[in-house]
Length: 259
Image (cartoon, rainbow, N blue to C red; front, top):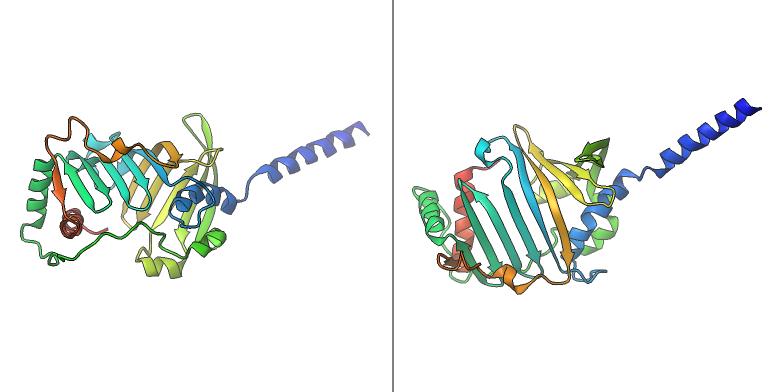
């Protein structure tokens, strides 16, 4: 009798543990939904902004000296963006604040743009160019059916700095991937128990990049200083018009090469 009780107790414990493992789609949705909700006009949260830090761990064409370098990203809808981090051997800050765009250090950015555009056939500048507000690449109604937009493969759990993270491979459904022209891309996510991304790998064929994600914060609004040059940066700033902003990104992307 005692043996049967022990067996039953063991079976119950195993069943409870299995039931406690969250469904792979639920874990994924709870991780990405807060970011996507930022861009939804009919959001269910007051958060309109997020910031995070990324540490580069590995990349197919990343110089060894850049390993461990940190990049910072800040976004606030409808039209504010701040990027700070390494680019082609330099550390740059690029900010979009509505229709105003600036880069620091400006002298290096100007030289980089000149070098990147040298001999390159870029599209002519559109003098009437305007920057659109940030928006989701799919219908907001689709947020309700978020798991249906992605294929999620569960890879189990893996410890990361002492935290047991859920690991999942994620790809866009073929129709959406084709529309966004991102066929063949696969993202691997390490998800913390409180549904924060801890590591992200993005890969396609023979190219990949691996980054740790730190200090993820959501907010109703980020400080105004986020969009202003620091005291160190303000002495060397290059301002770009919307028409030149697109050309700058096209030149840099062309310089790095398409993946």
